[in-house]
Image 1 (cartoon, one colour):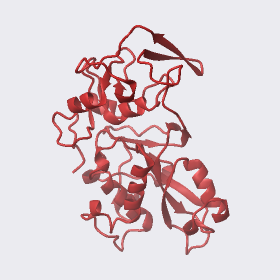
Image 2 (cartoon, one colour):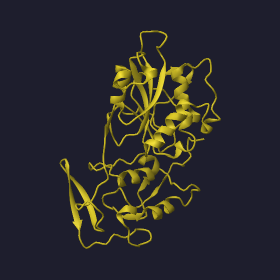
Image 3 (cartoon, one colour):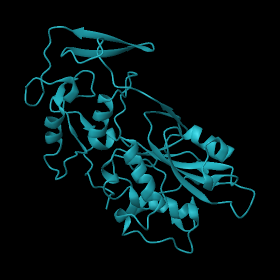
Image 4 (cartoon, one colour):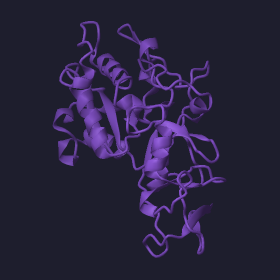
Length: 309
């Protein structure tokens, strides 16, 4: 689909000939930034856009369409109905998402987007906002984050240009989004007891099997590791524990930045994203399905900066 001569590609970050699957995604502890487009009957408002942050995109869209009295924004009040075009999510905190939101709203003021050109006469509001989104995903700090781009309105789903392809570890999807809150798992006593705990799904509940006599040790330095400072491999057959700092150093051997992007488990050699390890530590992926974002790209050893420059 072409919008004002600006062409995007709707394929996933692994470039193939197949179209991305349109599925409903359930996202845990959602922090995302969304782009709305007005379908107002008033031609003065039709086609306008709005960018915002939310923890529940479905509820937020309803608030915008119901009006300011029901939680909608002043700029969207009585100017709809509003349609969610695309959402960028996967931010680790609300602060990170709000920083992305501000830069997306104010590209002319963001120091990260000094290279970005201003809106041209040939671009409509939607095309301009989508171009800015693509440029943001290709620069620091966002290109190093495990983000997902989800198209909610397939009629506006367009192709990323060749020079602005998302980094290989990012995921591009189509379809609806549901949100679910999760909390970090705790031991039966509600505190760190120093005992090893492994969870297995059984219907809707988890069964905790506690090994009373096992002393947890780091898979890198072999020293004892407290629960408050540990991270666990995502692979159920491995589940090796590490000190956060020890694994971060292993992942960052070829990286000048403190926060690593990805690496392989020192024990089972499985390639994983650092963000997925942190999410698992915070209680995500407890339904027995561990989805490693960009796993195919990692396994194929795609260069880290592929498509980012």
